[in-house]
Every structure is written in structure tokens, then in C-alpha cells.
Image (cartoon, rainbow, N blue to C red):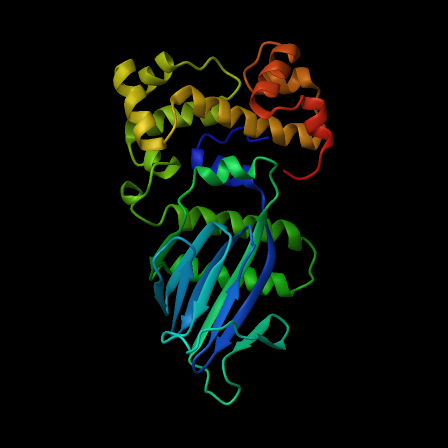
Length: 303
């Protein structure tokens, strides 16, 4: 798993293992509002025509126009409205008007907004950690490749053709990578993309992601980055949001969790994959990290 992937962003997206939950064309007219709460899923939206407002809990409202795309890797609640919200505010009642098509707003109002909306899920057991490495929201405009990928996902979701699940997984992987690399990473909060925007830190990140089972130390990573040990440590912590060896442990455990749930390798083999000299050393490290033994974790579902 992940053999030969030396690009950190690709390795994270691959480990996330995205899968489509919902894909629909939303058509709206007049004044309208729709709310979703108590969610915990990645969300993306491409505006095909017109305007709308999206308000995510804890963030300022964003007005989206035709050609805009947003990705929220960990959405819990949001309000989506017409450009001028209705008064008084209240959740609308979406009307299913066909397979994968939803209508919002008064039935007699002409349609003036169309958007392709999707919810997906990350099937990795290390979801929370990997999501924490990504920005809270990506908002880009006029990105033709992104705007072409969303209809392709929608079309494949509606079809019942051989290979559908694999094609959707690959399309979502491409969508996530395109979205995540589309914006100026230096303007993002600390995380993987900020780190990758610095060539010196990117060299160290490539070492971590391509050789999780190898000998990794702050000294060696600093050498890869061409920096002093102290300078590298502080720069890494500032730009990525955690200390270098904390990041190494997090990445190793993300791989270990996935391998444990797959159930194809012994603890000794997993230990070798993630940089521990023996199954017992790996087991003790895993208990300290996760609070469960590898065997107990492997037998649990979810989380």
C-alpha cells in the first residue's frame, strides 16, 4: 500500500480512500434556503449558473457565482440560500424532480441557479488525522478542470456500469488533488499544503511519506531540507502545525491503522512497514498512540 508514492499530497488522498455518497444537480429559483446539520462528511459544490450564498458554521458567508467551486473536507453544518436570503429565514423543502435532480424555491419562480453538489465519505480508519492536515475550505473560481470533473462524477454516479466504484474513487481522488493544489498554499493555515509550498520542507515531507518504514530522525530530515536541525524543527512546526517526529508518528499510525483493518498482514509485517523493529515495539507504540492494542483496533468497525 502506497508503495512508490513519493508525493505527500497524493499519498494522503490515496489513504483517505474517497467514495461518493450523494451527487445531485440542484436547481433553484426565487428566494430559497436549505440547511443541513449534524453532518460529518466532505462536501463539494460547483456553480453551473447563477449565484448562491453558503454559510458554514464558524466562517463568514461566501457568495458563489457561475464557475466557482468549493470543497470542505469536514463539513458538519451549513446553510445555502439564494443570493438574497428569504425572510423570515427557515429551512426549505427540496423537491425531487428527477433522478439526481432537486428543485429549491417557489415552484412558479424561474430557475436562475444551478449547482452540482456532492457529499462523499472517507473510508480510511485514520480519517480525523488526515483531514486535520488539510485546509478547512477551498474556494476557487474559473478552474476549468475542476468544473469538468464534477459533471463527470455526477454522470458516473447516475450510471450503473461495470467498474463504477473504481472509476468514482479515481475521479474523486483527482478532484481532491486538483482542488487542494489549486489555491495559493502560502495563504492557508498551517498544514500539509503550507509545508509543501516550501521547497525545503517539501523535501523532508517526501522522505516521510515515501519511506515510512525507514530510519527517520529530525537530523536526517533537516539534512534533506538543507537546514540546520534547530531551524528545520522550528520551521516545520510553524508551517505544518506539529513537530517533525510527531508528524512522522501520525503518518506511520495512519498507515498502520489502514493495514490493520485490511487484515492482510501480520503485526510483524506491519511493524516493518511503519518503522518499528518488532511486533512488540509496534504494539506498545500503537497502544500509547491509540489507547487500544493492534488486535483490538483491527476488530473494531468505524472510528
